[in-house]
Length: 422
Image 1 (spheres, one colour):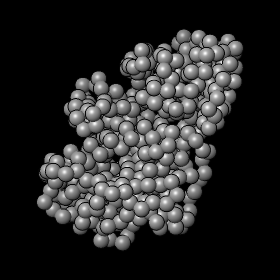
Image 2: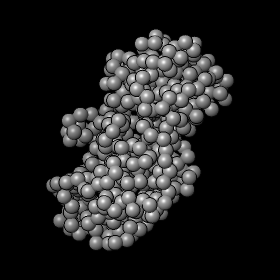
Image 3: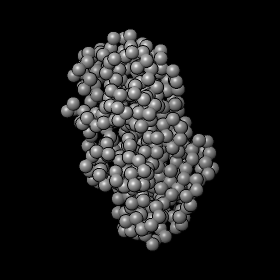
Image 4: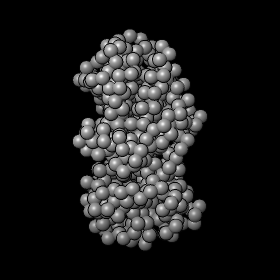
């Protein structure tokens, strides 16, 4: 899914500059000094937050109980927004990864201990390099779940690739991420191109005109671009506006949509912003079909939009773990640990982490875990998760792709089913 909702993409590709930004962020406690081929750590770091600079912060944790007696420690990183407007989506994912690590340690059959290192990029491309540096410079980190957002991924994809540090993103869906030469990047969700094409076909069944608004972010604009392409190819009339995600007053654009006569509205952007837009559209009296993509599907939308959110549709290449039979055990464990149901991208992050763990476990059994070997193992994955079969194409795309349609009613976002069947 994701890119920054608050700032335009600022590309930073120089590895040297990133290393400088990392100087005060390093949390390495591994014996190896090579970032390309880390050794296992021989000591466990505390759960206290690591030192940080800029807006990036990190913390390291490991699950207690049931862990191997071995002193060997391997670390999995997580990069995503843990603060800021879009922190809930990052927290959803971080929780899923944390649960996977805890369960793996509790199994007692690893022969080593896993630690999770969380690095906060606030969901912003300009904060992403410092967050990535925290993980890259920690030589005990052998793989990363994330980044969560597309813009953040674009900012550091080349740097992670140069460090041979494998990425599995649960949610970065911008279509260009797998055509940009980022050899480290893999994702377990369909692209915006796939999702928006499905949304366009669904809309074309019932409406003849669509007003498209995006937040100018990599994710939002990319999703809107793909939707517009699909609608035009189906002969649907469109008009388009871009409204910066920093906007807090959507009354003007809402009025424009309401007086346009268009039968449907699509918003490309994130939950915090679309919730404000939903309120403004209701105040403006808009009666058409209202749709947004995976970036809007969260409790932040539901809480922020209030009853103005009822009737909104959401397209998402994500699973509703609260109802899916395959996710029953995951959901029970999640609720037990966090005292709330899982939410958008929690199960995808859980799958990404478990797939990464399976690679590390196989390598450890053979006697060596290096970043290069983990990278090769991720590219060769064929892991059955609760949301999908984690198996990648040569470019890093997940082979299986299902887009689901959701709708909010009475303050609850409900799964309607596979979008192509709706």
